[in-house]
Amino acid sequence: MKDTTFIWIVKLVAVAILVQTLYFKFTGAEESVYIFTTLGVEPLGRIGSGIVELIASILILIPRTTLIGALLGLGTMAGAIFSHLFILGIEVKNDGGTLFILAIITFLCCLVLIYNQKDKISSLLKFRI
Image 1 (tube, rainbow, N blue to C red):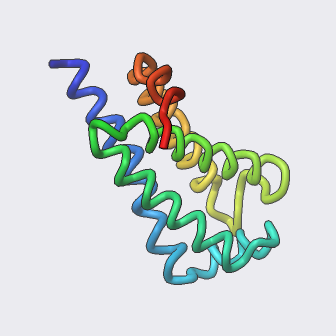
Image 2: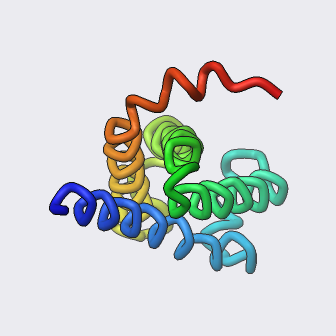
């Protein structure tokens, strides 16, 4: 019971962060446009990453697809973290590093979910269309 509750808390934390940022990406908020312009992928990168994060959020919440969603979220957050470390800087537009910290928290949550679902990785690798 405790394990299940903990995993659902981890899922909800990851999803809450991913979904919360969608508003800013999809509405073209100034900070979001600045980030993706600096990365050289505005507007397709902003909207595309928003779509990927939305899909990851949905997949994380569905027990049968949690592993796929967590892998998608992990990859997306790895990109965000590397962007902060090598291009944007930890602090973006005086946010105090909030976006960087949220990316790390989401990355860690996805890592926990992947570890929790590690027994399903081999069956995922056998997937065929």
